[in-house]
Image 1 (tube, helix red, strand yellow):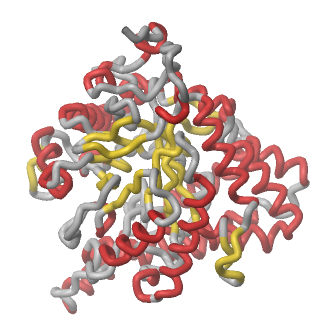
Image 2 (cartoon, rainbow, N blue to C red; image 1 turned 180 degrees about the vertical axis):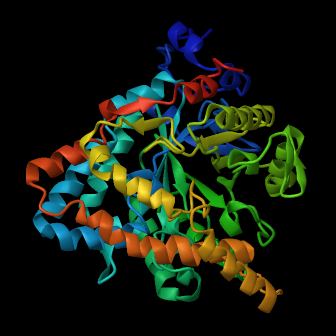
Amino acid sequence: MRRTNLFLLFSIPVLFLLCGYTGIGKSMNKNKKNPAEENWLKVSGDQIVNLKGEMVCLRGFGLGGMLHMENFIDGYTANEESMREGLLQVLGEKKYNLFFDNFLKNYFTEPDAEYIHSLGLNLVRIPINYHHFEDDMNPRVIKQAAFEHLDRVINLCAKYKIYTIIDLHALPGSQNQHWHSDNPTHKALFWIHKDFQDRALHLWEVIAKRYKDQPWVAGYDLINEPADPTGEKVFPYYKRLYNAIRKIDSKHIMFIEGNTYAKDFSMFTEVWDNVVYTNHDYATPGFGGDYPGNIGGRYVNRDTLEQDFLKKSMFMINHKIPIWVGEFGPLYTGVPEKDEVRYQVLKDQLAYFNKYKVSWCIWLYKDLGLHAILHQKENTPYMKLVSAFLSKKDFLGADAWGSTDNNIKQVINPIEELLKKEFPGYNPYPSGQQRHINLLVRNILISEALLQDYCNLFRNLSEEELIALARSFSYENYVKRQRLEDILTGREK
């Protein structure tokens, strides 16, 4: 009989044990010929298994903010490319490179991997932005330096028996309409320009060649939250990607998200070998409203959340294939009464994930206090630099994630009333009139105007000051959200 590492047994949450979790810890079986080979994962029926045939539930964090940056995670406004262009103008190339090189080196280090391992979790999803790997003015020429940072994260996670999933979060031309695909506009041009599609395929071929022999890479998340308004191009393009990658890498799992932000699988007509289909399960009461209670004219309680999840998962359920929830999780306000509601939402979600033996990856590992399990301390050089800017950004409702139009309703309301009156049938993809107005006015227009304020904060900073700012993003400069940790580890039911 195989002996068990008792320390790890008692540190792993009950929900992992019920799932048949086996992903963490060193086996004591001395008869293994090649332990590394047994760590390879594959799809078997409706579960993910290792090469011993043991079921493995992949559960962990998304590492947003590093190789793919987002405004609410890292503190700037608008989209990553625009922010980087502004900082390059302010800092000049030498200081710009100094800051970002140190930022990337500090964002995920050994203490981060050790901490995730200590929670009994076994997965880090690594979002990447194609801009790190390819220049738009020099397409298809891969920047090898970006792989140094990706390699480092993967190798650190492997050292602590943590699987990684490489997630292409921002594709050339933008695969969806919002900031998190590094989109400076509201158009997903990826779906209407073949060259953008060819470039993304080429990048995946390069990635597959590099990692095809790495067993601690669980697989490739091919397109984060695709949003093709026609719904006609997503499945054919996925098929093209699948076939191209399989010619290079026959082992790794591919993770495929539904259209319209990982919710819609209606255009999928085939199920492919060694593929996990994935949805995102952001629950409405995790962003506001009474819970349980009436939210937007609909009564929402735990049963409602579960039924919404099952609806998004029906493709996987009908085909008896694994389910992986690639993103979920509430936003936090700092107001105990409001956050209590959101913690309950999270506990209810984890309960039905466990019920259906679902793999999951909560969004997010690190940020500045809105969403993640770790948030930066208030006294770091970076937080001291940007704190007033963050308040202004919040007042103007510039970010889509976690901010509101409460302070600029005198601007937003007349536009909403005009469109309702003059264009009652106007229903722009993907979320209708109101969100479209917020996107165009707050998240693009106001955010672009604010961006120079952010970049000017870096003006005339010395090299030593820039290095100190970058080091603000290292593990020791973060604080745990203890309640979230207790829930994720099963200490709080």
